[in-house]
Amino acid sequence: MIVLGLDGGGTSLKATLVKDGKTLKRKTFEKGVNISAVNVLELERIVKEVKSWSGPVDEVRAAFSGAGDPQRKAILRELIEKIFPHSKNSIFSDAEGLIVCCYSGQPLTIAIAGTGSIVVGVDQNGKFIRSGGWGHLFDDEGSAFSIVKNIIIEALLYFDGLSGFDPVFNSLLEHFGYDELPQLANLQRLSDFKEKIASFAKAMPDTELVRRIMKKEIKLLVDRVKQVLGATNADKVYGFGGMFNNAEYRRIFLSLLKDVEFEILKIDVDEALAKKKELIELK
Image (cartoon, rainbow, N blue to C red; front, side):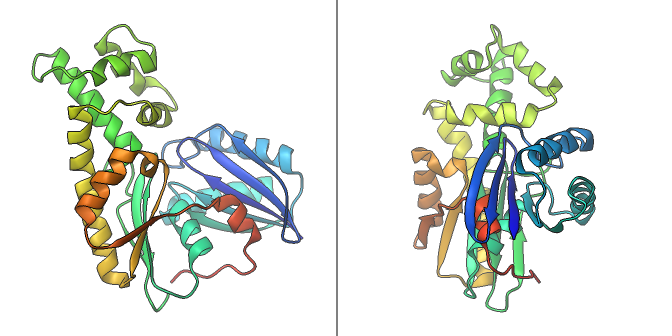
């Protein structure tokens, strides 16, 4: 049996092809596929590219950011069925896919902070619990996109004479290849604006403004963590996503979380999904 596992996020789509439990090959497609930020035609083009790479498969297991809404999940399912018409398919949001990979019958809480953010968990009865993850326009606090967006806001306020200078503004210009701060507004015109803006999170320096914005953003994310912890009664919190690779981000997160065991989750969702012997059904 050949299974294709897909992990689609705001900046890339990772794919793993597994046959009878053994990995045949893996590939990262450097294109964001968040269904709330990418149009269906572009998404179809990318999935067709994956099909050309994988060939026919018996089953597709896909976890995509932005697919937590039933309507968006239905769009993704229809697209997968169109491109892989003879394959069984299981469609999850990125957060659901992570839970499916990690759940072993015990309460679980995971804080996800990558391009976007969400906190999810499962209680002792197997009930799926979430807080946040409503998209880049309405929350995503503590995520790469939200943090960088707020840095850009401060840069433009500085240009308008309404805020003070911070050295991170020069780093913004260098990263995006601009000469003047007003040019940052052009990022909104890009079709892949979300992944482009989020990309600065890996390059942003440790400045007073960056720390202040991160602390404000992480505070709300930690509030969501505590909320989900209260519902799951899990004995620890797992962190997943690129923001947890930032040492200052982790320090602030842990200082606000307090007295809760924390561990960074290291897992390749695409491969784990493809190799999972039995997929749980989330309640």
